[in-house]
Image (cartoon, rainbow, N blue to C red; front, side):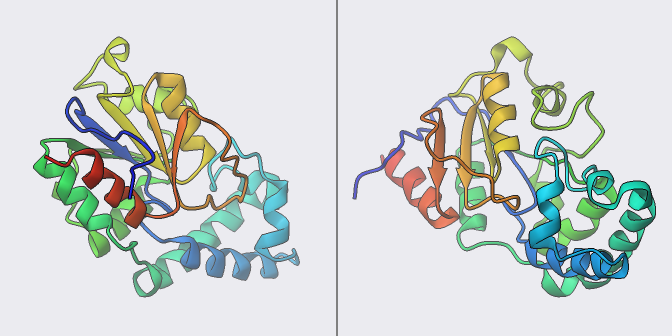
Length: 228
């Protein structure tokens, strides 16, 4: 089996992971929760209502596009429902832990960069991972601009790497969506995409992005690229 991408970690310093639908399978909890709230406001289900979104905004920030003047109230109801069921529904993906362990053994710093609000992420993180594995975690509205803007990555790396030092060999951004890839490429980092984005707005024709169907494929490519 030949590796499709050269993912040598020889010069890799930092691997920055998205959270939702990348390290954590939160889609099940999200869809269940949001459908409860949509129904309460007399709206159609998620598969239809999500078409109203701005795909450069976070899930939370898109509530204004879906719920209009009721956005803030609806989000608080969603938040409560989500927290009630997350522990029962949240999972990770096959080989995710193996990927993180492999990178750690290669002395790569692991970080999380998410548009999600910190209170939710910090609540669910310990269900899947030891938080001490990650050297930095940056959440929504903490940088000057969220993903897909490069500011989010610059803020995530601000204490360890200057903007002009970032390149595709020393910083990888791993996520499931165009937001993650746009952020990576605009900052000069390597963009790695795994799985299918929650908004279902994907374009796998971009040659500047490394696409993988799953963490299993990503892990196999890492092993092949770094075989001693």
